[in-house]
Length: 270
Image (tube, rainbow, N blue to C red; front, side):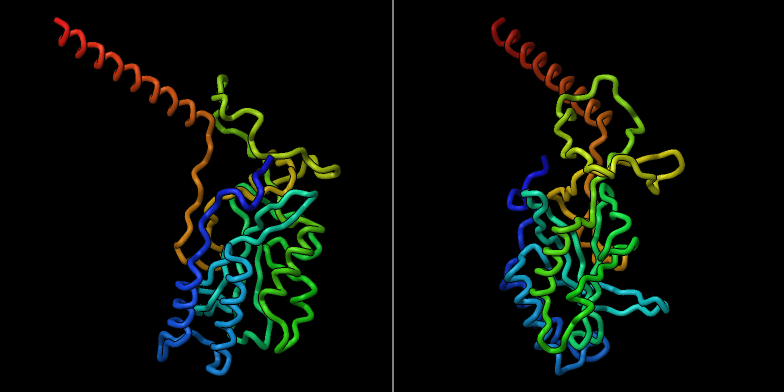
């Protein structure tokens, strides 16, 4: 069973540091200035401050966004996770929200940001295969009343009805005949829902993945594929063979250490 959102996970950003960062980055002028109109920068700051107050797991940052025509521009984004309740259990959904140049007259661009252990549900009513989100709140964005806090509330509601991400069981390339007990039944994957038993994955031919309950592990999430800030790293793989090797090495080190201690005591007694 996957632990709820309120257990573990990265520490939320300091609210004071967040406000200080936004004030500094939005007050820059000249070539380094962000491409937002001056009359909206204060409102952008207020929207992001309110967002992080309501959802501390989302962190504002600046990152390069590449448009479809190849243009690259430095934009603000809110990156992190939002809590989603599904069948009585709370999960973390990794997302990234881009504040485009025309914000806030136009809505942000929102993407789900799956880790390598997740796949996007296909088809999904509100998420396309690239991860781009389109929910009613974005489609009906109204200036100036629409805001980021209400957007996240709408995302939570829609994702709770139809989770956009699922965990996938990857085949073990190095099967271990005697796996460590720590890699038994407690893998964190629940039973596959009815109708989603086996599907073709994009891992290559003749490779299948099973949909399990939506599971968002509590870990550091990678940055969006649409821009990189370098602040997150991918988690290490839990390979049973590597775990077995580590356990064997640790046991050998403990045995050698015990022998050395015994030899020292023998010399002292003699």
